[in-house]
Amino acid sequence: MKLFNWSKQDQEDKKELSRIEFLQAENDRLLDHIESLKLDITELEAEKKHMEDLLSRSGFKNRVIRIGMGLVVLALSYGLLVFFGERNANLPWILLIEAAFIIFMGQGEDK
Image (cartoon, rainbow, N blue to C red; front, side, top):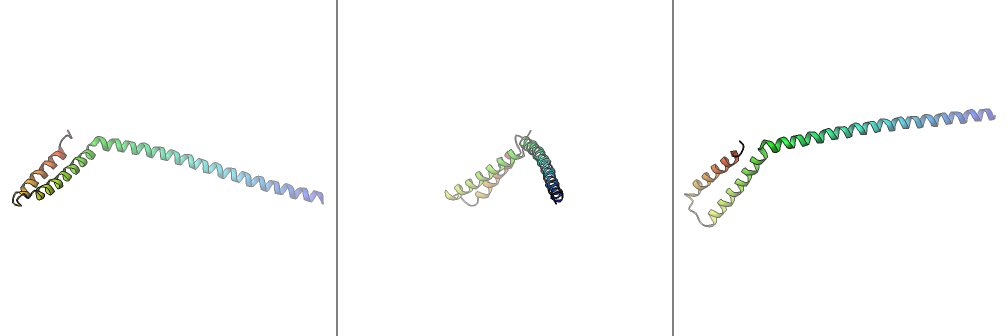
């Protein structure tokens, strides 16, 4: 009877060891997966920094900012001209000249 109990205990120990080995293998696999994700994130951050550098060097961002500021000035000018009672006949010409200036300002300083 004791021999049967020992063998049963041995079987339980083997099952527990196999569970522990399985969990360790699973843990190792997950750690490897985490490490590969960390490497991917590092590569993506480097690519993002490279793209940001290219964008800042290209001048596109600066051009968009200059044109946006020009449009704000155009809207403010229109509001001021209407507020001070500028004649409506001259208003489109003044705004057209200012819009042309904004477009030329957006294309400047790229060379």
